[in-house]
Length: 453
Image (cartoon, rainbow, N blue to C red; front, side, top):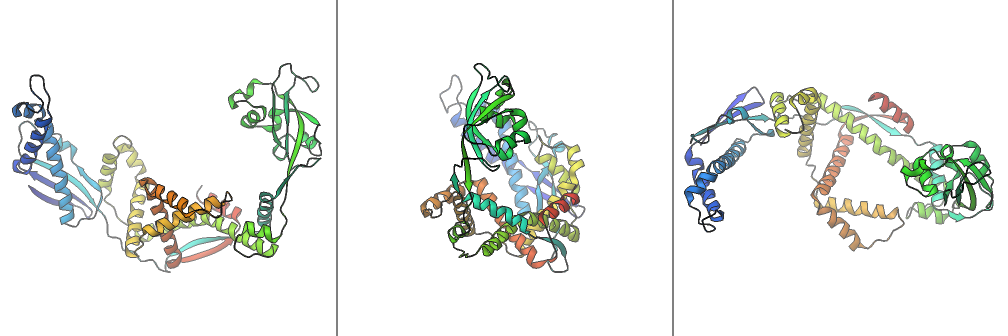
């Protein structure tokens, strides 16, 4: 066997692999003998089919398979021996390979195209400036969250007169007119949330109502959603249109959440272990938590801006012709040469960014340990359970969850990728110069939307 490498430009090369019979014959004979032991044919006992017949039946397919194995092993060994940093995988010259005469030839020549990764020379420092937004959480936003929290931890009561925030329970009865019920019409009991009604007239008539009182409404106009109508009258969504528009709703009960008092018991439920004693301290805690929620979106934007900036300052060259061949070869049934040509700019930036990320991970030793993965999963699971009021969870249950996720290759890869992204994000914030601007979240969304429109 003989392999030669011919460089084509700076970042592409052609490997020429010459095989002689001695390079593959022993493997072919061994595989044919294995097949002989398994072969079953009429007139012969299992495993006793003559070797010549086995060779005649399977010789060509075994030859092709074993030569390909030898080729792949040889090409990757060459890449390893020469310490080549390649992109994608070697792409065989299919046109030349198609000319091989497997019946007559014993010596073969194959060609493989390879793409070489460019050297990344990048140092993160304060000479690289990237815009970074900090979200200012206004009092009106804090007010809304405080109201939601007081309702979440409030008490359920059943008042005698309804208000807009109340949920009504009662009976829906199909009508022919405001006064006449439809004979054998649809009747069902369900809930009605006054606040979400679309018909202002119906809403105003239900505010201030008492149990036993009723309102006739055009249910489609009042609710505006087939799925909600279906839930109220007790049918499938696709059946909602089979009934008339008029329904009488008779109130049977009124449910209202009485907001929680702003006392220390409430503070402890909202912020356990934080030792908050005053409403003002709780408001500042809520402001901080909301800011952290908004910051997730800000950091996504920041990461995109960093990617654009680092792609710009590194200006990496790529073996473009090779990558186009490789994309088509690696996605034969999904991507056409025309599509690759059209979208190659996006593909190229993805390759460049992956090279930059790999360089940064290696140069800054950003490794994710198994302990970090386990700790992340435990924290995630505990936080999820806290949302459902489960504070003191048995460690054995936590361990079962962690072990279940760790047994799923695709899921655990997502965790590693997430933690790698967090480490890179922290690195960017530490090393780069951040051009900081403070603004409200709505203004941030508007700015970003206009920027990427």
